[in-house]
Image (cartoon, rainbow, N blue to C red; front, side, top):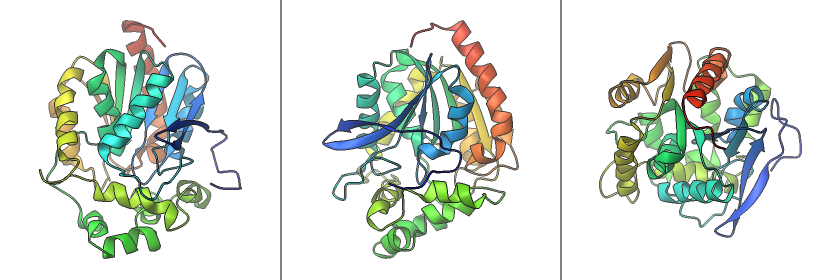
Length: 295
């Protein structure tokens, strides 16, 4: 993917062949697994500081979805929600993950919690960061434009108008240049931005969309997670997953521990990691002390 070291990312990915393609993932540390699921247009780089914070006490597993990060980027792959969900299922099954804590962000909410709804007995806890795992009838124009025929593909794949824009639109405070380069490193060409575009196209907004039924099933699966301890950490300056989504999580999971960071953007870990790290420590210690301790 890249020939130079990436800022704040001192990790070497592992690889697993799934459906004839190489899926990259981090597997750092030992102990109870903490599985971190990213969205679009990020990759495992999003969780780099959280992995560094936790790997001395927990086993951190962080996949790069197919088409993202260090994973293969096939041009003719479906790149639909059910594909990503099934890939995560295969990965965790082959790694023999019996029980874990999930951390999800952006598209990782539907993917990770979709898996959790199928396997609630394997979920010790969930940490939810600026995401959704349910239907919504709202989409910012700046994202909708990237779905337009011809124009959208040109913007996302030729001009890098989605991944590139996220380095300043997904944060409230300007990213350090080396960090922005880290986020963008896997998406350096038309070919390598294929999944970035397909993820945008795969947002289901009506029942005719091919991923609508999968998202409905993910939403229904949330009912199986009502007894799972949840920590909700929310960036209040998110133009996409705004306060409406935050309120949806509070309504669906009224017992969740909720923390709202009013000055953080969509990439909430970039701007609130100093506060989220200790929150995660306490949440993990409490959750794993109270529940079964399997790894």
